[in-house]
Length: 624
Image (tube, rainbow, N blue to C red; front, side, top):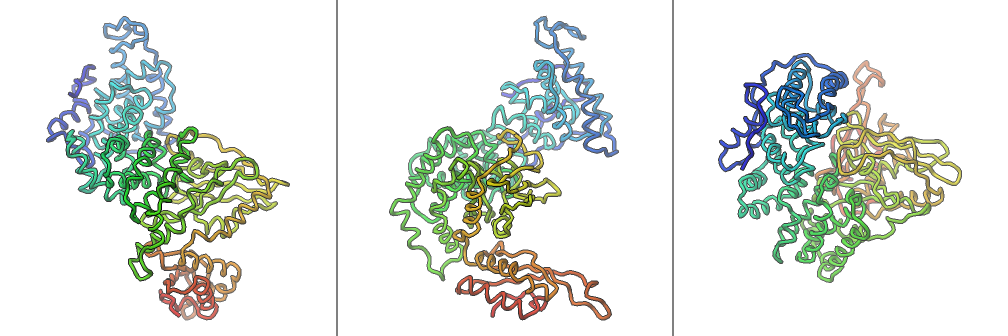
């Protein structure tokens, strides 16, 4: 039963809550429309002028601060009768303040992001007053921005009684994100359902959302199974919201033995939630992540031994070993116990036999790549030397290759005292690849301080920033200091200043040398690419003779058995044109795996570059 609106209306115009409630009651079975309902026409005319973020926030602060920080005395000082209860705000005073907020916002050119930023920074003198004002604005507000102010206040001060109102307002598309923020700390399953109702795409996800919204409990398992079969394809936040909306940890605990689809699907969701390829690792924003990992690990032994299941267990183990999930509040020994349990499953004879057999070299390429990856990676997550402490063992650098079926590829995981640095300090993307940080020698310490970019936002540094550190040698120590980064995005991790890290120089040099010379993680095409890049660093004349330089060398994203060499070359000058006036062009050269050793393919590629102008390759495949 949805609660009635008990606070007096601010104006004759219907409140946005009332509009959303009317639309919801007209929807068959209470289903959630994809993208939410459109807002009704706002009663005020919005100004067309654009203002800067700083100016808009300053004007909004001036408008809101006096009203949101008022003290509610409960003495009935407004036009109403007063509550007569000390500390309980007079509702007439609250309604009057809410009406004033509507009037003040009507003349401002602001957006919901401005509101969130400003209200989050305000410190109300009386939380009871601010909470009552937030409730008045959300339940009776007629202006989208005024309702956003109410939602932002309840994000900090909301209580369980606010949940039904927030859920209804979340049906309005432009208010969905603000309602979700307010719901997250109060009721994460409801917040997840509102979020999915707005963002979920595709028949499988929409079917699950409809079943949850309509309360069709008997239909949820089947709809969930359809989603879990394609869990590797969903975006990280979608994976987290699905896990929260269906209370996946509880489903795993209550599942009957033999429900392999549910267990395997949960593992796939955990892997997607942990991805930091595009943005933050969503697992750090999931309040039930620890319980979900534990529920999955308990049921892992029930999975039949297949290559797909092996890859799922190995992926979860890699995440627990050195991924963002290591930053969760585990308590003493809980994470280590899960790793021990997963290792005990994968070391059983029937599971180990998977890696001993498998497809022949002429079999399915995708299955062969996955098997080769599992063989190379089998021991990595169960190492015990990544959590060493003390000056000699503070630093561990690991090149980590993820399951080839995932969109992620390779990242350099930097652990300090056992804690993964980049997700803790940055949270806007994964660390750079080993070729960038290790093969280039960027992490080596010299007497000359050097700033190194450890990670960059997926959308580029110019958009959302990057993580930089200055590395310098100081006598018998190496120091990481002078950090540069944007503020981390919201998550369960508290924002903190980054400290200066001091390492014993001998141990530091040894760890960097070990990581630079570790080729165990590479596959043949990637190894070929690294050898070609190293050869060009050692012999830059191979390209300068052609007025060319390396742009990018690696493996093709959709065909990891193919080495890609991208070169930036001067075009051949036209008649009467000097070489310096000729435009730059890019040449992409693909080198397929042909069964020969990576060392031989790299040497042949370097010989060809020494003898043949790459501008004549014409996108050829490099066959010799």
